[in-house]
Length: 113
Length: 116
Image (tube, rainbow over the protein chains, first blue to last red):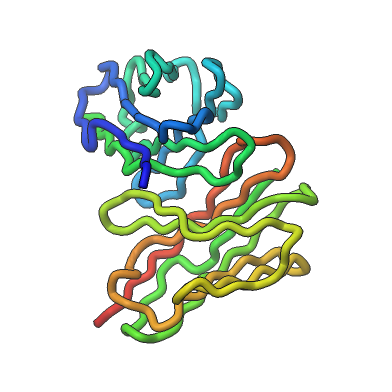
């Protein structure tokens, strides 16, 4: 069964460093999402992306964040200058256009020291 | 505004017991979708069930069943004959009916522990 994959599974970085989280959505899906989950808290929406542009973003998704689809398969989330409070699990998800169900990847656990 | 409330934070049951997870939602949309996702200790989010707002028929799928009541804005999820592998955090989520491919709004999750 096709699934969303994410790399790396874990990332440790120093405050102020840039990180890029990578996702490979399900191949026939064209809508992509990033969510994050701070430890012990609920899953929060960051951004959705379609047709090479951002469809919707939350107030969390400030200028430090950016998303990109650099090629036909990858979807990336970049955090330019990480802060301690960026430590969280980051989930990528994808869906078929017009379809409600979003399928999530296994997540990348980011720790900012 | 969309809101999902999962008032239960932790539930502990003994294997083979039935357990019901509560979810209450708020939305101004007349059409919307409700989901349950499972997050096992390994951390991934696993889609379990989806329900649309115009179909209040309750269903059973294996050991899972759900009770959707629009009048009380509730979407409760029941696991029958629980197993240790059911131990996980369970999230209820709301998807707006207006506009395709919108964001999911999650509740805070319920930690379910099933003891052998």
